[in-house]
Length: 453
Image (cartoon, rainbow, N blue to C red):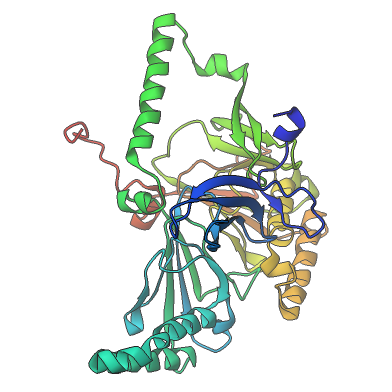
């Protein structure tokens, strides 16, 4: 494989004028006649959605044909639990992205669609109900003949689903997705939607197995790390923060945009009056995608921290800010809030953080600004962007920037340090049970943990 071929994106957008779609052909067994057929694989991606794998099988001996689409998306670090309160027909039109691993529930009618019973799809809440109704009605004629009693019960439940789709009574739709790849539209975007609650959680053993992650793989990785530590101890290599501070580490990875092989650079640095952090940057030569992320060099603090800064001067926008991946951000004057996992970890200026937040909302979310967005939502987004641009350009003063980090690993520069900053308020607080649950602390066993090994 040449260097140029090595740099090509693994998943490319499907285009009609693409003369070289890079189809992979594999000889496969035909289950119809038992002879060898041919399976063709094409790795592509749907714009504004996700990566997919197109598979087509054809047997020249018996003429058997088959095709299938599988998801090529990566499993997120945490699962996602989405709750949406449906109270009007407008809510039924919320756009929904449901992955293969998502469980859909409506507690009010004791309804549940188990994971992997249906392929991942882009639809809306009404579409989910319509598909379930159509699926139940499909075999009703046969049931009425073979099992009239069951057919009557299913007919009654179909009517319940029809009434639910008419939104005659409020109900709650719950999407529980261990892969973290499901999404429900925020109708109040860019503001907070009171009817929509999104919670990220750590997967348990069963959920890891559901998405294809097994403890054996994690155990092998752990054993390899222990072997490396033993090797360092034998050779006398003492890897400390002092040695890492002067060195940039490099390791191979895959591009989060096109999945092509690329390299990530990592460096340990120290923030004055705060702590050590790890800065990671990735630059993909195949598609040009660039990303950077910051992680805390220490563990989770004993207390959470809430930092509030009132912007009174354009120089405030040049303050250094460290936003960890567990930190949420809000602007009360705009009734706007960004969840903890939205922007990831970033070490930048306050202006850079606001610009990144704007890009996340506008450039990378087709449901808010793309062809899928409604005219009313586009107008709301345009109005919000104008207000945000005034803050970024220093034309609007008096608004507050609030950083809330339950892990206590976020920081905003105090320009008066070591004296107190009159425009900045820092509050330390005890985490709630829900905070510890999101951070995975409730499942940690800190005493006698070796007994079960």
